[in-house]
Image 1 (spheres, rainbow, N blue to C red):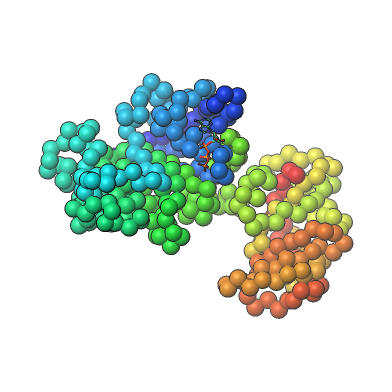
Image 2: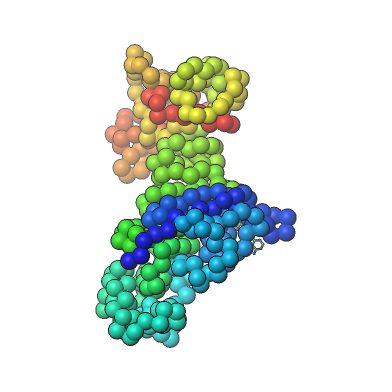
Amino acid sequence: MAYGIDVELRNLTKRYGSFAAIDDISLRVPSGSFATLLGPSGSGKTTTLNAIAGFVTPDEGEIRFNDQAVSQIPTYKRNIGMVFQSYALFPHLTVGDNVAYPLKMRDRMSRAAVAERVRECLAMVRLEGYETRLPKQLSGGQQQRVAMARALASRPRLLLMDEPLGALDRRLRDQVQIEIKEIQRQTGATFIYVTHDQTEAFVMSDLVVVMNDSRISQVGTPTQIYDEPDNVFVANFLGGSNLIPATVEGVDASDYLVALGDGTRLAVPRRGQSMNVGEAAYIFIRPEDITVGAPTGAQERTVDVAATVETVDFHGDSLRITARIKNTSDVISIRTGRHQPVGGGADIGVSWKVDVSRLLKR
Ligand code: ATP
C-alpha cells in the first residue's frame, strides 16, 4: 500500500458572507499519522475536511501536501480517499463492483488486477467472500466497511473520514473503530477523521485537534488533551472534570500559589501559562485523581481540603461522589473504588497530589 503524505494547513480561513466557518487555522498532520478533528456541531470540522479534499476553496491561507501547495490541484488529482456517514454505495452494484468502481473509472487497470485489488481491500475490512452481495443484503456496519474498502481501493495516500460511524450503534462503533485504526497502521496512509465523540477520538488517534467556534482550541496526543487541557473549553468539552474556582496569590519557580473559596492555600504546577497575581482561575483536576479519606497532611506536595458529601452514585465499577468544599458553594466530583464507605452528609477530607492539577484561566 502507498505511504502517507504530510498535510499542512497554513492560516486557513473560509467565510460564508461575513461568517468565518474556519478562522485562521494552522495545523500539521505528519505522514502516516491518524489525526482526528474533534468538536461540537458547527465548530468547523467538516469545512476543514472539505477544504483539504478540495470541495471548499479557502478565502485565505494555504494547504500543502508534502510541502507542495495544492490549491491548483483538483480533488480527483489529490489522491485522497473519502468516507462519509452516509455510505453512498451504488445500490444496484454488487459489493465487488462498488469497490472496483473507482478503479475502473480512473485507473484503467486490467480486469485481473482489479479483481485482485478488490479482494485485498475486502480482506482488509474483513468482508472476504461478500463480492457478489448487494448493499441491501448487508448490515449498516458491513455497508460502511464496503464504503471504506472502496475508499482504499485506489490506494490513497490520504484518507478523509467524516463521522463514518455516526449511524452505527455503540457496540458496532467500538469494534469498527479498532478496525479502522488497524487499517491505518497496515496502509501507512495519513488519516484525517472527523467526530464529535471524544472516546472515538481517543481510541483511534495519534493527534487530536479540538475545534471550537471555527478555530483550533488545542492540538495534542489523546493523553495530552485529556490530562493537560489548555483552556476551559477543552476541559469542559471532555466532560466530567473538576474546575474549582481559585484566585492566584503568588508564583514561584515551579508553582502558582492559589487560594480556594474557603481560604485554603495550595500550589498548582506552572505549565507554560502566564497568569497574574490576583487573577481569577480554575484548578483543573480529574475525578479519578482525587482520594477521599482522612487528611494525608504530612505528605509533601499533597493538597487536603475539608468537604461535605452531597451525593454518592453507584456506577458499577466505581462510585461518583460529589462533595462541597466547606464554607463555599464549590462542588468537587470524585471517582473512587466502589467500596468507599461514605454517605450523604459525611464530613470528609479530599486530597490530591499537586502535580496532577493544572491552573486554567477563568
Ligand atoms: P457538524 O458536527 O454539525 O457537522 P462541523 O463542526 O462539521 O459541524 P461545519 O459543517 O464545518 O461544522 O460548519 C461550520 C459552520 O459553517 C456552521 O455554522 C455552518 O452553518 C457554516 N457553514 C458550513 N457550510 C456552509 C455553507 N455552505 N454556507 C453557509 N454556512 C456554512
